[in-house]
Amino acid sequence: MTPTTTTDVRSLVRPNILTLIPYSSARGEFKGNADILLDANESPFDNGHNRYPEPLSTDIRMALAEIKNIDPDQIFIGNGSDEIVDQVTRIFCNPGKDSVVALPPTFGMYKVAAGINDAEFRAVNLLPDFSIPVSELKSSWDETSKILWLCSPNNPSGNLMEADVVEDLIRSFPGIVVLDEAYIDFVPEASFLPRIDEFPNLIITQTLSKGWGMAGVRLGAAYASKFIVTMLRAIKMPYNINVLTQGVALAALKQPEVMRERVAILISERKRLERELPKFPFVDHIFPSVTNFLLVRFVDSDKVYRHLLENGIVVRNQSYQPNAKNCLRITAGLPEENDRLLEALRVL
Ligand SMILES: Cc1ncc(COP(=O)(O)O)c(C=O)c1O
Image (tube, rainbow, N blue to C red; front, side, top):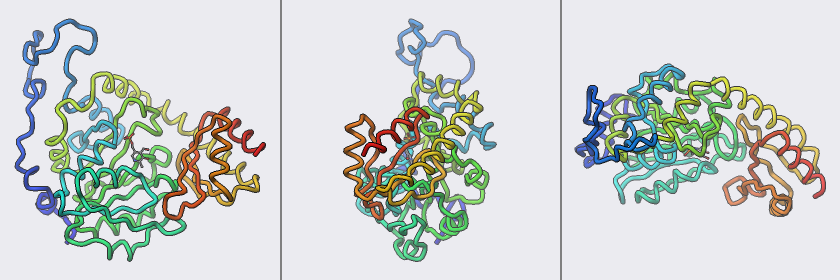
């Protein structure tokens, strides 16, 4: 049965997590104003980071709430979306009993998180054009299946999953659907976020690592019902987002136009690579992408990979992934970096 109410979603949570008494941090307990802080055994010498960070990244949630037009209590901030992938698995999967379902080739951390948490990982391969094999997928899950991982736009294929199919899956999956929108800043109109309240069993994850250009600060966000956000808060490390990250991320979120300009440059560079790469005889196929990267099938991907490395250029080998034989994933870089990529390929 598809969970359609908070009560249904609550029944999917591991019983020990539901009854967990979360760690209560000194800064979390403190309400009101005080100018002398003797509550957390910190150092009093002000160097900009002698105090523990605000536990719920409230300033960041407020900024994102405004940008995304959503209630800040429906936002959870994680140490990268990687942390959220692990947390969601821990909240819903009873180790040794439950399963998760994902659609390779896709982002690798869903499987790693299942492995860490001793959840069975059920893989239903995407079709050769990287669309979803809906009926095969629907017959893969059962009452042990707690999470369905959907990645749209998908890494490494770069395509969006069809909105109708995504909606149908959210409405038919008997557990939590996580829609990973890590690359959504390259195609914001495709986001499911404006519809989050229609689906009590939906968690949307996004990140500052891609379009926002801040992979180094480690900041991801989950958008979901208030109940699911409460569960994510209950199991997080007390101070998961450090002071430096909160400061840098907040400053960037105040300048969304900088992000948009850079996203536009990267999209135009990806399109240039899409036009230029097919001119090489050793390029077999370029998969359509809406992101900042391209999945490219070569006649001999190992040869291209080695040649690029010899020229100081590293791309990601995806050949081991289903339906991605002889494929390399190439991220759009700066214009001059992409020039060098094309120059290197000209002398292969
Ligand atoms: C689809 C997808 N989800 C999540 C992530 C991880 O993002 P973060 O840097 O926020 O942990 C990546 C990073 O490559 C990704 O490709």
